[in-house]
Length: 330
Image (cartoon, rainbow, N blue to C red; front, side, top):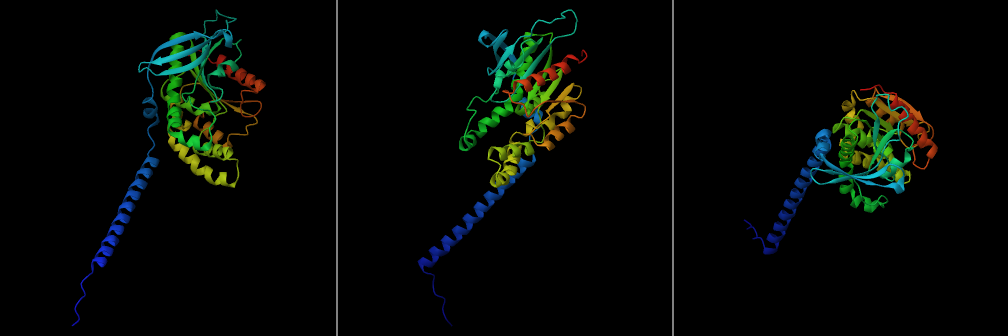
């Protein structure tokens, strides 16, 4: 009978390394599986939008007003400071004198959110001859507005936090207008990229009217379209865009307009679209209309709104003001 040869030290070391490699592989597989499960759960369970936005909302404590005559008559810079000490800024212009001050109907004030590039200077796009107060709220994001792709990715968590804080900034603006002009009816106006945060503001405050200019719903599709456009629209851009759009939409899911449609019930709403809209996907516009079936609808001439297109801006302001001024008293 042949005796079994004893294992040499080298054989023992090799067997030990083999078992170690096997255990390491199992460990990493378990970690990967747990990570995948966590991501899948996060993806499938977006936060309650009202609670998510309310966590970023703080009550108004005071309004600090500074005249800005260099920007025009009745223009003021506002600092709206909360009970927790954080500050929202904006540009206010008081209403022009009313031609019929004895009508007895309340005056209107508009709290608006325009494009990130225009920021609070959107107030200056509204003709100063209108008998309506206008407050443009500044976007909470105070970093660079022009970033490369790598810089954008590096700042993504801060940008996301600022985007989710925007409805609270708008709600602070509404509270500030009620404080300064307590008798006025207040309308929210969101334009272009400012439309989703403006609609989401309904989770935090209840305005007397809502106006959305060149707005859209279905953020996944919308952000995929914007990603493809930013990347140049080639084959690679079209390949990357759907996944990027879906991820971006999940990160800001609390701003999805369709998730706040119920909060608009009973609030007069106007959806104003560009006749020659070339930027927003048509299904996204249709999705917004479907989410707000009771809204009044209108169009304005030209393409997707741009602040430098003065004639189109005037047409938008005129359409919105005619609709607001025709609303019956609450």
